[in-house]
Length: 177
Image (cartoon, rainbow, N blue to C red; front, side, top):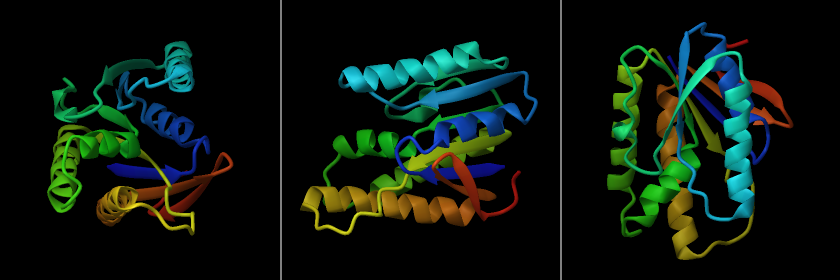
């Protein structure tokens, strides 16, 4: 099962993903964290997520990988939350030339497919970056093209797509309570 959760910043995406994972009844849940602590605010956000998982009644194993997520030693049949695609893609994008994003889309999708095939359920969190109607620099436009390509491929292959707004779920594809 592949679930994609997309929404704005602090819209409840991570909470929704963790809830869906917990509802599977798995004895251990796996969390791939892709953020890099870049400043005090990001450090605090990362810590808040860690504290929340530590306080949960479910057992969480966290793998912190900003790139190359296949390094995470996730066991076969695991329930996995990948938080967040937007950050992971940015980290990978920063290590490449921005001229041709297709190889990067292929690489990221290949990693996602391997993780998905390995796990029982994969829940991917991503940010909605497409509501602004302003012009962007070439590099930002390249990144937005990367994310648009990834989102389109993931929506196409996902069993369920959820849009989060103001803490409320809107099912865009599939069925999920």
